[in-house]
Length: 220
Image 1 (cartoon, rainbow, N blue to C red):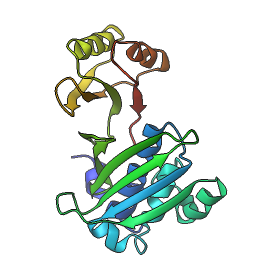
Image 2 (image 1 turned 30 degrees about the vertical axis):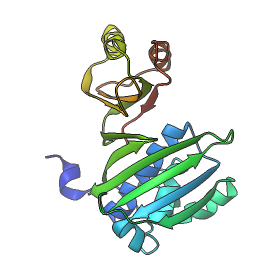
Image 3 (image 1 turned 90 degrees about the vertical axis):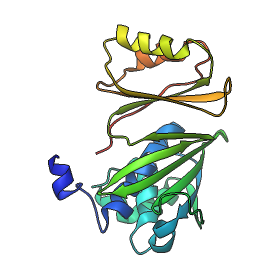
Image 4 (image 1 turned 180 degrees about the vertical axis):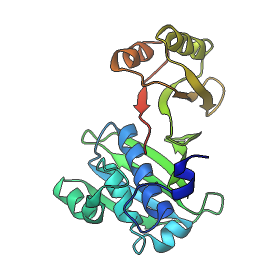
């Protein structure tokens, strides 16, 4: 147990689950999108859907998409700041009994029209679990340096990436591979103890069948 477990996150209130966790989900979506989206649609489930205005969940998710941290005093003004930045957004209430009650599904489109989907759940105390990237079900919490590596499911690609990281002195804390089906679209999720630098990401992206590598830095 650490001090975070005892006193909770440093944040702008009122709720660690509905505010701090929501900021983190939005910020991860921003990173996966490669920066601030041009337009977003946010589907809210469970208590997120029922209380998002009163608890500021809408402002929190948009703040994260703008790159803010959970303790940023500008969170309360994030909707207007997003409009000023040219980012359009809309919220929808959705129902799915199979997802965690504090869940948001963010569909973001960049200036070139490329779309990404990130689904995350706020599980208490500001902590989150990201459970979907585009059409692939995943699971990570953003507390480590996290590499997302979409690729085609082919023999040898995991070994090539992990050997490359070992050669670069990067220690892997956890690795999981998710796929739609054998030989289909897949996603490596690698949590590391050290940051992976730009030139190292380029080496990973040069591995056969790897489509991209995205580094998510720890979100506090």
